[in-house]
Amino acid sequence: MDNTLMTLPDDVDRVTGAIVPSHAAVVTNPTIINPDASFGVMFSSRPTTKVNYYIGTGFFHLTQTKYSFTGGNDNRKYFKFSGHGGSQYRYQSIKFNAFYYLDV
Image 1 (cartoon, rainbow, N blue to C red):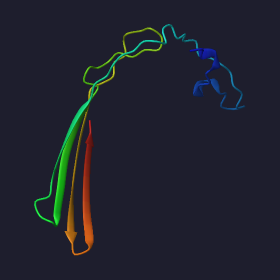
Image 2 (cartoon, rainbow, N blue to C red):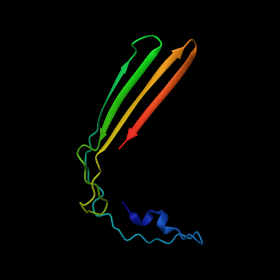
Image 3 (cartoon, rainbow, N blue to C red):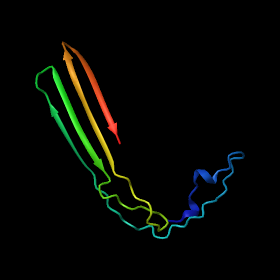
Image 4 (cartoon, rainbow, N blue to C red):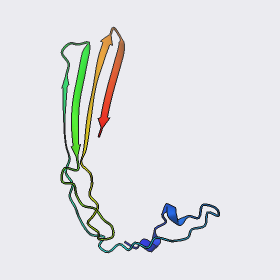
């Protein structure tokens, strides 16, 4: 990767709009591969023809992979959890929906 061809937001002068390359970081090893793992489950049920509900959860970055474009090993992807759920109630031809989402 040739970083001299990149234009980053910090490289644009806010007053004139001119492009002034200022990034000094050099990509030392652009071929690093760091696998990441995530997992999720979902449960859904329809106890009657009028009611449907679901609940689920997801876990992200289980391996907390290191990432760096400049060769440093200080950066890690943080573990992330999300949960979601919802329900649907049918009354004649009208559907009432509720959806909840939590991301931590």
